[in-house]
Length: 294
Image (cartoon, rainbow, N blue to C red; front, side, top):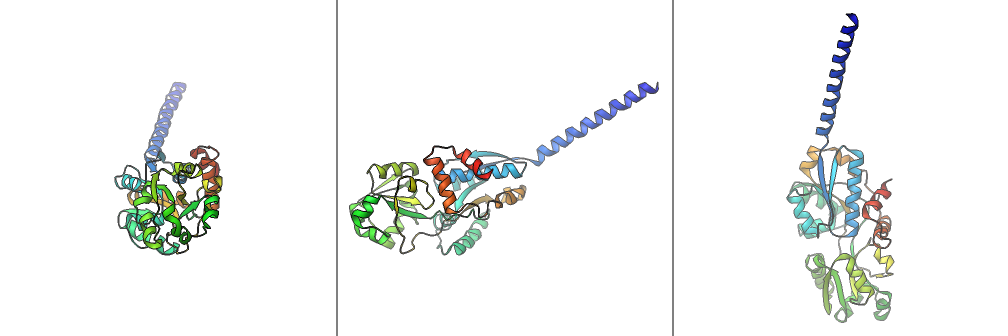
Protein backbone atom coordinates (compact mmCIF):
# COMPACT_ATOMS: atom_id res chain seq x y z
CA UNK A 1 0.00 0.00 0.00
CA UNK A 2 2.78 2.40 0.88
CA UNK A 3 4.53 1.51 -2.40
CA UNK A 4 1.38 2.34 -4.43
CA UNK A 5 0.96 5.67 -2.58
CA UNK A 6 4.59 6.55 -3.23
CA UNK A 7 4.21 5.84 -6.97
CA UNK A 8 1.03 7.94 -7.08
CA UNK A 9 2.68 10.89 -5.35
CA UNK A 10 5.67 10.58 -7.67
CA UNK A 11 3.39 10.67 -10.70
CA UNK A 12 1.57 13.77 -9.40
CA UNK A 13 4.88 15.51 -8.73
CA UNK A 14 6.04 14.69 -12.26
CA UNK A 15 2.86 16.15 -13.80
CA UNK A 16 3.24 19.33 -11.75
CA UNK A 17 6.89 19.61 -12.74
CA UNK A 18 6.13 19.19 -16.44
CA UNK A 19 3.36 21.75 -16.17
CA UNK A 20 5.73 24.24 -14.58
CA UNK A 21 8.27 23.71 -17.34
CA UNK A 22 5.60 24.17 -19.97
CA UNK A 23 4.47 27.40 -18.35
CA UNK A 24 8.05 28.61 -18.23
CA UNK A 25 8.45 27.93 -21.94
CA UNK A 26 5.27 29.85 -22.73
CA UNK A 27 6.46 32.76 -20.64
CA UNK A 28 9.76 32.87 -22.49
CA UNK A 29 8.01 32.83 -25.86
CA UNK A 30 5.78 35.70 -24.78
CA UNK A 31 8.77 37.61 -23.51
CA UNK A 32 10.40 37.29 -26.94
CA UNK A 33 8.74 38.59 -30.05
CA UNK A 34 9.53 39.38 -33.66
CA UNK A 35 10.74 42.62 -35.21
CA UNK A 36 11.67 43.58 -38.76
CA UNK A 37 14.81 45.44 -39.80
CA UNK A 38 14.98 47.03 -43.24
CA UNK A 39 17.71 48.58 -45.35
CA UNK A 40 18.23 50.79 -48.36
CA UNK A 41 19.44 49.43 -51.67
CA UNK A 42 23.22 49.69 -51.40
CA UNK A 43 25.96 47.48 -50.02
CA UNK A 44 26.87 49.35 -46.86
CA UNK A 45 23.32 49.84 -45.68
CA UNK A 46 22.51 46.19 -46.27
CA UNK A 47 25.60 45.12 -44.30
CA UNK A 48 24.71 47.46 -41.44
CA UNK A 49 21.17 46.06 -41.30
CA UNK A 50 22.58 42.55 -40.93
CA UNK A 51 24.99 43.72 -38.22
CA UNK A 52 22.08 45.29 -36.32
CA UNK A 53 20.00 42.13 -36.72
CA UNK A 54 22.84 39.91 -35.48
CA UNK A 55 23.36 42.11 -32.43
CA UNK A 56 19.69 42.02 -31.48
CA UNK A 57 19.44 38.26 -31.93
CA UNK A 58 22.64 37.74 -29.91
CA UNK A 59 21.77 39.99 -26.97
CA UNK A 60 17.98 39.66 -26.74
CA UNK A 61 15.32 36.96 -27.05
CA UNK A 62 13.85 38.64 -30.12
CA UNK A 63 13.56 37.08 -33.55
CA UNK A 64 14.51 39.38 -36.42
CA UNK A 65 13.04 39.40 -39.92
CA UNK A 66 15.31 41.07 -42.45
CA UNK A 67 13.83 43.13 -45.29
CA UNK A 68 16.97 44.42 -46.95
CA UNK A 69 17.41 46.20 -50.28
CA UNK A 70 14.04 47.96 -50.06
CA UNK A 71 15.00 50.92 -52.24
CA UNK A 72 16.21 54.49 -51.72
CA UNK A 73 16.06 56.58 -48.56
CA UNK A 74 12.47 57.70 -48.97
CA UNK A 75 11.30 54.13 -49.60
CA UNK A 76 12.95 52.94 -46.38
CA UNK A 77 11.52 55.86 -44.42
CA UNK A 78 8.02 55.17 -45.73
CA UNK A 79 8.33 51.55 -44.63
CA UNK A 80 9.35 52.74 -41.16
CA UNK A 81 6.45 55.19 -40.97
CA UNK A 82 4.00 52.47 -42.01
CA UNK A 83 5.47 50.06 -39.44
CA UNK A 84 6.36 47.59 -42.20
CA UNK A 85 9.80 47.71 -40.62
CA UNK A 86 10.69 48.90 -37.14
CA UNK A 87 14.20 50.18 -37.81
CA UNK A 88 16.91 50.61 -40.42
CA UNK A 89 20.42 52.09 -40.56
CA UNK A 90 20.43 55.71 -41.69
CA UNK A 91 22.63 58.80 -41.78
CA UNK A 92 22.38 62.13 -39.98
CA UNK A 93 22.82 64.27 -43.10
CA UNK A 94 20.14 62.33 -44.96
CA UNK A 95 17.69 62.69 -42.10
CA UNK A 96 18.20 66.42 -41.57
CA UNK A 97 18.72 67.64 -45.15
CA UNK A 98 16.64 65.16 -47.14
CA UNK A 99 13.73 64.12 -44.89
CA UNK A 100 13.23 67.40 -43.06
CA UNK A 101 15.00 69.79 -45.46
CA UNK A 102 16.68 71.57 -42.56
CA UNK A 103 20.16 73.10 -42.42
CA UNK A 104 22.99 70.86 -41.27
CA UNK A 105 26.14 71.85 -39.37
CA UNK A 106 29.06 70.06 -37.80
CA UNK A 107 28.79 66.35 -36.97
CA UNK A 108 27.75 67.17 -33.39
CA UNK A 109 25.25 69.84 -34.46
CA UNK A 110 23.73 67.63 -37.13
CA UNK A 111 23.45 64.70 -34.72
CA UNK A 112 21.65 66.83 -32.14
CA UNK A 113 19.26 68.18 -34.78
CA UNK A 114 18.68 64.60 -35.97
CA UNK A 115 17.66 63.59 -32.44
CA UNK A 116 15.25 66.51 -32.09
CA UNK A 117 13.60 66.11 -35.49
CA UNK A 118 13.10 62.35 -35.31
CA UNK A 119 11.76 62.35 -31.75
CA UNK A 120 8.90 64.64 -32.69
CA UNK A 121 7.77 62.07 -35.27
CA UNK A 122 7.89 59.03 -33.01
CA UNK A 123 11.37 57.83 -33.92
CA UNK A 124 14.66 57.68 -32.09
CA UNK A 125 18.24 57.58 -33.31
CA UNK A 126 20.67 55.52 -31.28
CA UNK A 127 24.42 56.05 -30.86
CA UNK A 128 26.40 56.47 -34.12
CA UNK A 129 28.32 53.50 -35.52
CA UNK A 130 31.47 55.57 -35.92
CA UNK A 131 31.84 56.25 -39.66
CA UNK A 132 30.96 59.38 -41.59
CA UNK A 133 29.70 58.14 -44.95
CA UNK A 134 29.56 61.55 -46.55
CA UNK A 135 28.96 62.06 -50.22
CA UNK A 136 31.84 62.85 -52.51
CA UNK A 137 32.61 62.93 -56.23
CA UNK A 138 35.17 60.67 -57.88
CA UNK A 139 36.86 60.39 -61.27
CA UNK A 140 39.35 58.05 -62.90
CA UNK A 141 43.04 58.90 -62.59
CA UNK A 142 43.12 59.56 -66.33
CA UNK A 143 40.34 62.15 -66.08
CA UNK A 144 41.94 63.78 -63.03
CA UNK A 145 45.26 64.13 -64.86
CA UNK A 146 43.70 65.28 -68.13
CA UNK A 147 41.81 68.17 -66.50
CA UNK A 148 44.11 68.66 -63.47
CA UNK A 149 41.25 67.92 -61.08
CA UNK A 150 41.78 68.09 -57.33
CA UNK A 151 38.69 69.84 -56.00
CA UNK A 152 34.99 70.23 -56.72
CA UNK A 153 35.74 73.77 -57.92
CA UNK A 154 38.19 72.38 -60.47
CA UNK A 155 35.53 69.96 -61.66
CA UNK A 156 32.90 72.70 -61.95
CA UNK A 157 35.07 74.57 -64.46
CA UNK A 158 35.06 71.63 -66.90
CA UNK A 159 31.75 69.99 -65.93
CA UNK A 160 30.05 71.00 -69.19
CA UNK A 161 32.41 68.60 -71.00
CA UNK A 162 31.70 65.64 -68.70
CA UNK A 163 28.93 63.15 -67.94
CA UNK A 164 27.86 62.48 -64.37
CA UNK A 165 26.70 59.02 -63.33
CA UNK A 166 24.81 59.03 -60.04
CA UNK A 167 22.20 57.22 -58.04
CA UNK A 168 18.65 58.11 -58.97
CA UNK A 169 17.83 59.89 -55.70
CA UNK A 170 21.05 61.95 -55.93
CA UNK A 171 19.62 63.65 -59.02
CA UNK A 172 16.72 65.19 -57.09
CA UNK A 173 17.43 65.32 -53.36
CA UNK A 174 18.29 68.79 -52.00
CA UNK A 175 21.70 67.70 -50.69
CA UNK A 176 22.57 66.10 -54.05
CA UNK A 177 23.07 67.42 -57.57
CA UNK A 178 20.64 70.38 -57.31
CA UNK A 179 22.72 71.78 -54.44
CA UNK A 180 25.98 71.24 -56.32
CA UNK A 181 24.57 73.28 -59.18
CA UNK A 182 23.80 76.15 -56.84
CA UNK A 183 26.95 76.11 -54.70
CA UNK A 184 29.56 75.26 -57.35
CA UNK A 185 27.73 76.24 -60.56
CA UNK A 186 28.39 72.64 -61.63
CA UNK A 187 26.42 71.73 -64.76
CA UNK A 188 27.31 68.50 -66.52
CA UNK A 189 26.86 67.76 -70.21
CA UNK A 190 24.56 64.92 -69.21
CA UNK A 191 23.40 63.22 -66.01
CA UNK A 192 22.66 59.50 -66.02
CA UNK A 193 20.76 57.99 -63.11
CA UNK A 194 21.69 54.43 -62.14
CA UNK A 195 21.96 52.02 -59.24
CA UNK A 196 24.84 52.14 -56.77
CA UNK A 197 26.61 49.08 -58.15
CA UNK A 198 26.29 49.92 -61.84
CA UNK A 199 27.90 53.35 -61.64
CA UNK A 200 31.37 51.97 -60.85
CA UNK A 201 31.25 49.66 -63.83
CA UNK A 202 30.00 52.59 -65.93
CA UNK A 203 32.93 54.83 -65.04
CA UNK A 204 35.46 52.03 -65.54
CA UNK A 205 34.02 51.38 -69.02
CA UNK A 206 34.00 55.08 -69.94
CA UNK A 207 30.22 55.45 -70.10
CA UNK A 208 30.39 58.30 -67.56
CA UNK A 209 33.22 60.55 -66.43
CA UNK A 210 32.25 61.37 -62.85
CA UNK A 211 30.33 59.44 -60.19
CA UNK A 212 28.81 60.36 -56.89
CA UNK A 213 30.27 58.15 -54.17
CA UNK A 214 30.19 57.51 -50.46
CA UNK A 215 33.42 58.09 -48.58
CA UNK A 216 33.28 54.52 -47.27
CA UNK A 217 32.66 52.82 -50.62
CA UNK A 218 34.91 49.80 -51.03
CA UNK A 219 34.82 50.15 -54.81
CA UNK A 220 36.72 53.44 -54.70
CA UNK A 221 39.82 51.39 -53.93
CA UNK A 222 38.88 48.52 -56.21
CA UNK A 223 38.61 50.82 -59.26
CA UNK A 224 41.48 53.10 -58.17
CA UNK A 225 39.36 56.24 -58.40
CA UNK A 226 40.41 59.73 -57.33
CA UNK A 227 38.25 61.38 -54.67
CA UNK A 228 37.92 65.11 -55.22
CA UNK A 229 38.01 67.57 -52.33
CA UNK A 230 34.74 69.27 -51.39
CA UNK A 231 36.57 72.58 -51.01
CA UNK A 232 33.45 74.59 -50.11
CA UNK A 233 32.33 71.89 -47.63
CA UNK A 234 29.01 71.52 -49.41
CA UNK A 235 28.15 67.99 -48.34
CA UNK A 236 26.95 67.65 -44.75
CA UNK A 237 28.15 64.95 -42.33
CA UNK A 238 26.52 61.57 -42.80
CA UNK A 239 27.20 59.78 -39.54
CA UNK A 240 25.65 56.31 -39.68
CA UNK A 241 23.32 55.20 -36.87
CA UNK A 242 20.19 53.13 -36.21
CA UNK A 243 16.84 54.88 -36.81
CA UNK A 244 14.19 53.13 -34.69
CA UNK A 245 10.50 53.52 -33.93
CA UNK A 246 9.93 54.73 -30.36
CA UNK A 247 7.01 52.34 -29.82
CA UNK A 248 9.20 49.30 -30.51
CA UNK A 249 11.81 50.58 -28.03
CA UNK A 250 9.08 51.05 -25.43
CA UNK A 251 7.94 47.47 -26.00
CA UNK A 252 11.45 46.00 -26.17
CA UNK A 253 13.85 48.37 -24.34
CA UNK A 254 16.60 45.74 -24.57
CA UNK A 255 17.06 46.74 -28.23
CA UNK A 256 18.58 50.04 -27.10
CA UNK A 257 21.31 48.33 -25.08
CA UNK A 258 22.01 45.75 -27.79
CA UNK A 259 22.49 48.25 -30.60
CA UNK A 260 24.37 50.83 -28.56
CA UNK A 261 27.16 48.29 -28.16
CA UNK A 262 27.99 49.11 -31.80
CA UNK A 263 28.76 52.74 -30.93
CA UNK A 264 32.11 53.80 -32.39
CA UNK A 265 33.04 50.32 -33.66
CA UNK A 266 32.86 51.11 -37.38
CA UNK A 267 35.23 53.86 -38.50
CA UNK A 268 35.53 54.88 -42.18
CA UNK A 269 38.38 52.50 -42.95
CA UNK A 270 36.69 49.50 -41.31
CA UNK A 271 33.45 50.16 -43.17
CA UNK A 272 35.29 50.53 -46.46
CA UNK A 273 36.97 47.16 -45.89
CA UNK A 274 33.64 45.46 -45.15
CA UNK A 275 32.10 47.00 -48.27
CA UNK A 276 35.03 45.84 -50.40
CA UNK A 277 34.62 42.25 -49.18
CA UNK A 278 31.08 42.29 -50.51
CA UNK A 279 31.57 44.30 -53.70
CA UNK A 280 34.93 43.03 -54.90
CA UNK A 281 35.40 39.66 -53.22
CA UNK A 282 31.82 38.54 -53.73
CA UNK A 283 31.15 37.64 -50.10
CA UNK A 284 27.56 37.62 -48.84
CA UNK A 285 26.59 40.64 -46.75
CA UNK A 286 25.21 38.33 -44.05
CA UNK A 287 28.55 36.53 -43.68
CA UNK A 288 30.58 39.75 -43.69
CA UNK A 289 28.34 41.13 -40.93
CA UNK A 290 28.60 37.91 -38.90
CA UNK A 291 32.38 37.65 -39.29
CA UNK A 292 32.82 41.25 -38.17
CA UNK A 293 31.01 40.58 -34.91
CA UNK A 294 32.56 37.24 -33.94
